[in-house]
Amino acid sequence: MRQTRTKTIQEDIVVCDRCHREMDPESTDLEWQERIAIRFRAGYGSVFGDGNLVEADICQYCLQEVFGKYLRITEDDPFDPKHKLGDEASRGYQEYQLQQILATENFLKNFREAVQARQEKD
Image (cartoon, rainbow, N blue to C red; front, top):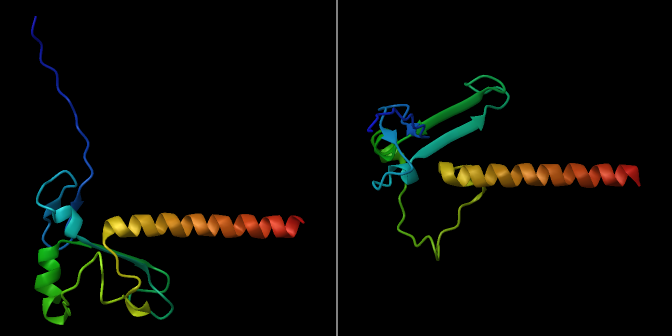
């Protein structure tokens, strides 16, 4: 006997906050990999408001269209970089890099707290 059933599939995608382009990690067009995630906590006196979380997910096309004339693009080999990112650029990451960095920062924070607690105990 044949029967039909409905399956629901849940996928994680990112949608560009400007043009609403969907970026899917399973797609072969590499848009997922080239997207830019902006996420930071506004500082004291910021135009975004003291301590507010500021976020945006932007596709590579919108980044080029909006900021292209302001971006400096230097040919470089990512496996043998000739140009190092200085401190002023150390907070600019693509989403996949950001997740790894946040996990590392969280680990280091927990490690520091454990060491400090151990020192206070001894």
